[in-house]
Figure (tube, helix red, strand yellow):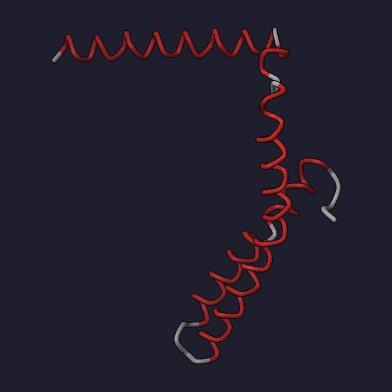
Length: 109
């Protein structure tokens, strides 16, 4: 059992050393970490996905809030459950706008 624990700690040390060396390399040579020309298609696809998610997530949150309101009006869920879920849905639905406001200092259009 002691050999197994010793082997795990040696492997973890190797992984940590490799990760630290890789991080330091990319910090000192950022050109190697930048996207190559053949990754432009992936970058544009991810940008389009981000724009689509900016539209889809708030709409989905509004639909979920509507379902919660119907459930509360029909007395399928209690008031405390409705309040908890609705606060969570509002925060999740506006997460993109909140993150943009907090980290970039400007609102999303």
